[in-house]
Amino acid sequence: MAENDIYNSKDKYERFINNLDSLTIKPNKKGKRKYYCRNKNNLVYFNKLDTLFSVKDTSYVRRIRLMESVKVIVNYTEKNLKDLDREDINKIVSKINGDFSPKTRVDFIRDLKYLWGNLFPENDERGRIDETIMPYVVRHLSARQDKSREKRRKDKLTFEEYERIINYFNSDSRMQSYLTLALESLGRPQEMLYIRLRDIEKYDNYSKLWISEHGKEGTGFLQCIDSYPYLAKWLSEHPKPNGEDSFLFINLRGNNFSKQLTPANINKKLKLACKHLGINKPITAYSLKRNGVTFKRIMGCSDIEIQRTARWSSTKQLRTYDLTDQDDAFKIALVKKGIIKDNKFKQHEPKLETKECSFCKIKNGFNDEFCINCKRPLDREILAKQFKEKEFQYNELKKDIENLKKANETEEQTTRISTEFFKQRPKLLEEMRMLIEEKVKQEKTVA
Image (cartoon, rainbow, N blue to C red):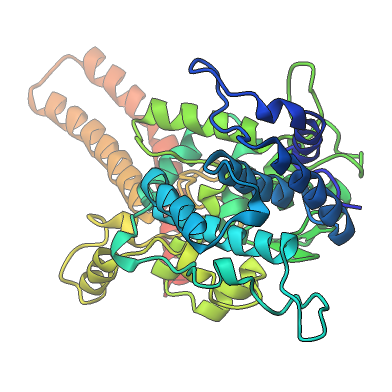
């Protein structure tokens, strides 16, 4: 029996089936409904498909999509569907070409051929139904998309924008954990949101998150390496850390407290974040999977590595999810040859690795500037800058004393400045000593 999903498709489908009679009512201009059944006799095909879906145990989200295609068909013709010929089918497809995007047209034709093959199957030479033969009236249709009509997706993020979104949720470890895990593991929203605490297999510096239900590619696990610091932080703050049946990602307030987080919740938060940050792109929970594939391609990961991470059966799906373009490849080549600086085109060299503190050896997130444990800077440049500042303060105090002596100031003024110098001197020297030690450790690590 097909199960409900994170999008509550089961309830949507059942409401649709229970209200089939209303489909014959012509919608008014102010209503949301656009299509209606012009011929009442065509309602029987909805019921026939419902029975077929139950036999095949088709998922509810797939049922809804196919029923939407049937709604479009019965809206564009007044004939009984069994009486449609090639010319009638061509007229319907022509209207689809004018009203929908190229991608929607491809999906519609694929659904149309599937529906006709099940509703009006061809017979073999003995008069038996033959599922291998495509019905004649739709056999000529092609579900291939014209390359010249392809459009670039608008939800492609630069790595700099992705970092800004992660930093925006600094006070929400749950969202940081979800966003980093989704990008690294290439997990689908439904797969991730159905993970429970019992599905997490923790190790010292990494973790496996097992998909035990609602996995589109079956069961498996999501890898968590670079996103592990964010996951560990969220687990330490989880309201129900001992509840093994509790979902990993849950609501934290309101009537739905401790209940399963949904893609709608995440999309709403991402929309607010993008609006606040001035990122004018339609970023959703599913955009993270596409951008994760894109970043991995830019970082030089092989197709096989991406395929195994995403748990695909082949590498064909890379064409759908990869958002890289010719400009990305050109700029990467310029960076590799040293023609342009890394800092200028930081977004074209994503670095998702965890940062290890050279002093306390704690793993930190890729966007952290200071260690979450000892609060020391993780960047060598910041460390060198702090060292120069302390050295400058120390030298300035020494100069003040020497200038006072040269100017023959009163003994009282000299004593006061000298006392201040000797009070601060041990502290400054100790801070400089620690900074020197950290610089040496980091240089050894880099070497």
